[in-house]
Image (cartoon, rainbow, N blue to C red; front, side, top):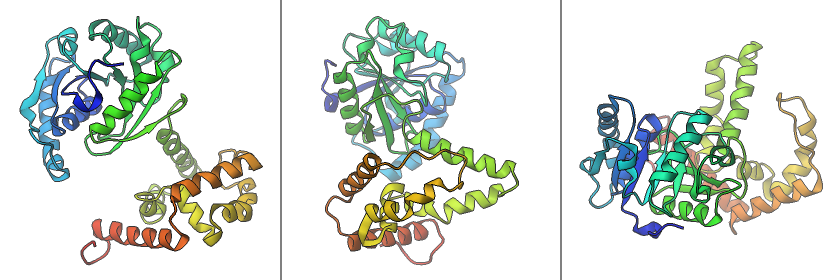
Length: 318
């Protein structure tokens, strides 16, 4: 799709230099890329360089690529100049659908043929954003998490008119750029992580509104509870361990009926055989051959390491 193989990309254009766009700039600089940025705000360059300066100490702790330097940032005076020699484009404009449509169409017209253009949208499907572009096949979603220079995850998805090769190219590029990538097989409004965050957020608001829990209660329930495990073992594998040696199969067969209990304001899906088998098989793949005892040991050590790293347990992490 792109004239440059993903591992060989050296110049990236970042369009939009706010919190998310600036975070992308910092990340790409730390990975040793030459970055050209553009933002229409008159004070954009000053704000962007301050953001990069503020992020750099954290990036140094994470480890800089060879040749990484803030001096490899160039601020272009126009959008066309910003993408003129780009080998990849990351768009991070405000979350307004019409703005995204128009901007992606402009980027498509100005960017060299074949170069993949990714949007940092946090919720819009690419199908809705690519309608005005002349060559929509190279437009993908590359949804990061704030700050992009610190949080590894990026979710990659195409739209109805996106070429699959563009999705695959983008996923390979992000991996080469040091990101942890989920390549989605289909479009889903809000993608995966935001939908999970949103479910938790809505239930939290219900509890506060109904006087069922305070803000402090809710935050403590996560930071001192499941959040400790989620840092290294997601909710699905965590629940599988709750099934003991029987794993997720036992968990679902034993606790499945509780899905009908009114524990949340979200309606539970029907736990039919197909859903049960999909979840059990997925957990088996995630375990990747590790035994129940091995998974328990990993979980326990992980919680201890997180507690020590966050100053809640004395002694050095292993």
